[in-house]
Length: 333
Image 1 (cartoon, helix red, strand yellow):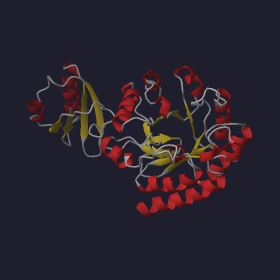
Image 2: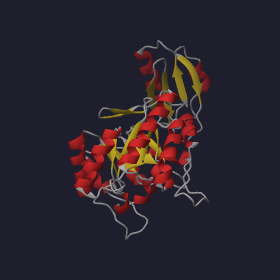
Image 3: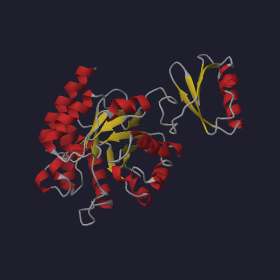
Image 4: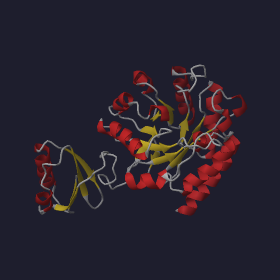
């Protein structure tokens, strides 16, 4: 249930109403907008007399919400969420591009890529340290050493960094990482999500290859229910009958999620297509569809990459694509 207060309601009046709701055994999520305040009631609201609440002078409207995700629900939080990482804001109407290699492989590699993607306009450096791989024999990443190299690249370029976390046991290693990525394979690792709900860092949550948008939002709810409301959603393609591409990029998820949630929405065209030639056109399409940002994999030598070289752009290809992305975004505005 949500209760929308009229403009001009005093803080004392609001607090009295919140206290009454809490006395009924409910938790209250407060969303302060520019023109109105929304109180989201979480818990068993069946005992609440909707007509009684609506009759209060301070109350504008009362609505019952059927969706099980509350904190991630746009009805609870009409204002768009903006997440700030260093000097970068995600969700404010700008187009944020995260770029870097699928896997950190050496100091020379990550420093070169970081410098070149920054020069081309990337706002955040992405790089994999701990890797979730389908095969146990595939390269699993440089792990703790890889995080150290990402931090060295951050120091050298000033770019905030994002890398994937695969286990809550390693959380201490991520103290200086700016954004924690939950990969598609971990989207429903609920114990990990609970732990991330207790940390004060932005979390990028990727949609699983066979998961619905509702399930994605329920996973976001796990993080937010723990107290961490800095969640960024990412569409990275889903599994369909089509085998031409690695996955099928569901661009309809962008406008659909925009109606369902207030959280920022990113798109990963690299993992979705699995083919470097398709990354640029799908990145342009995602921008036109209204994505808040993109994750694009960039490697200085894709032919010798230890992980997903087939889908990585060269720094020169990334620079050309980034210029087109800026033009598309500018045209839309």
